[in-house]
Length: 608
Image (cartoon, rainbow, N blue to C red; front, side):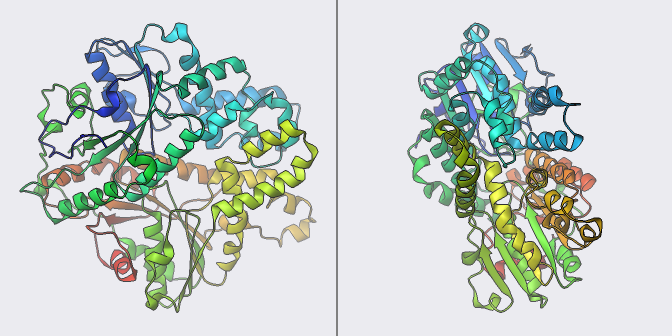
């Protein structure tokens, strides 16, 4: 690990290790809300200040590069007026995906039945399509020497995953294989539109793999779930030959000062424990630690200060929060949700959200509270990193709570073997290789897990079933479109029989049986991702029942100046949740992790 600091926020941080001996291209990658955009923008500004010509490229669906730089950018090269030498461009992933879909669907519109068009469109509506469409756009930048010739550095906000890179390495034409593979939950639909010269992709991939040309910066928070995810990303990218990696632990709590309160000291200690316990793939990487700031880093002056450059804005370095100015949000705690849920005697509760927002904790707390009210509860998870047996080890939960875990790896392996044995049996070796790679996609895992998950839906008709993570709206519609669970069943029945059949999808759409709880954090990117998830579920006619905003500083009553400043910044994000959520519960940031049933009970009994 480098000498990057955990200095108090009043000090200027040391030089960022990830900018030392920087090659021409640098990618920033990481989960939503970890600070990729701020760090990418700060790096681009710093390089330009050093006299380099820099191009900043954003491909992040939740990008706010324009907001951070305080200038309109858009999908064209735009000089940043306040930073000589810096140009920026925002590739709109959703617009790229829409153009990409139309390129595939347009030629067959009017030639195929509407139902078939709807099926193809849904197959092209998942995250795989968005990522591939975005990569299709920025390979123009990455592989076109003439286009990037004026620039000393090209900085990308968001990088492709190892899965996308492996797909681009596969041989042959995609369109012909689509005909053989269509009908499975896969990325083969998205890949159908990749008609660029394969030499273009080869050049882009060669540049990605060459440490002398490209550096990949993994951005994470100093939290157990975040560092585990970063470690998985590091291994995945190393497996496809991307080894020039650096790690940035962003927004870490500075060492407690004289005005720090117990919460600030506890957060600092907890983060230091996470750093000391980082998985091996991360401990081997050059590492920079960037301190938590009092507020969002917006504007060029604050961006310069973030990485230790000259600035006239002392607010980015000096905690200036006034604890008396922080009003506790007028939002109820989890106990209100428990009371509403417990008014019935059964039901399915699905806790959904992006990684690292606290779904496992919320699911376990709801399960314990429902059991305490005398209900039979089955708690299950599809999260490979969740350890529910450890969280609920006490004997007093055994009588009314049962625990299970759906193993995504085992479910996906079984599904993959089944597809290869059926559709793969009719393909040549090259076709089977493509199918085998395609079946490694996130879409495949979600569909495979849904097969295991569906029996829990039936169990919820007799008791409470609380599930930590669940299939997205795209996965549900993909199952619907391919006929695996819904349409194939219904359309092969007589009208009389169809009226008496209930499929798993129909049960998930039933608000009297299924309650979807979206879990998020009071920050810009996690809230935007939660809104996107709600929209995704809406396509499958599933309306979230409630939102839980987790780890709120505003709900803690902190007296720490730095944390108070962060608490004030939660206001706009909490307001946005109020505007879109039918009901909201607020959970404060805790000094200690809620492990064990007693700690979980406090989450549903302590008012915010």
